[in-house]
Image (cartoon, rainbow, N blue to C red):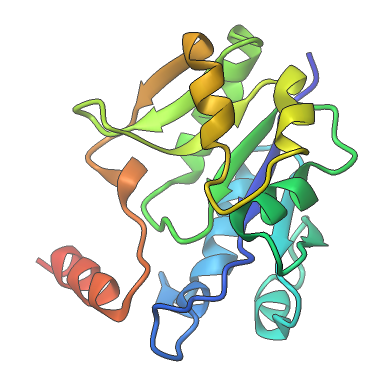
Length: 195
């Protein structure tokens, strides 16, 4: 089995951030997007970052990293990002949302490693108490389905149809569901981290 490719999905427009770009928010002294891409690279497999059109600041934040950048069309939400990310791939893919700052390099490495042991399984990160979240690893035979997605629901249709192949992988705490979409989300998260 070939190693998975990590797809870091970073094409969103941060429309709920009141003019700020959530992926350029500073976490650990660097933009969140760069931090997440660096963590992905540390997993030791190829990394593709999916950006949207007209995002030069995000491109700049990624300079010098051993990644491939691909651009999604701006017309079809999450599906457009996934389609752009899987184009031409024949490997398993690990879909990682770039706005989830608590997902670690170790989490990604664990998922990549487990994929080799269960090559037909869909591995989905979950909270310690079993709530499904992200990232999600799809085996290579489902990449063709990901390439045909439409709309803004991501890969939910594939997950529903292939539910028998789904295995939840509990990660520590709630980090599999912590995504930061609004200034209030960011303020609350930063306040919790400073306790």
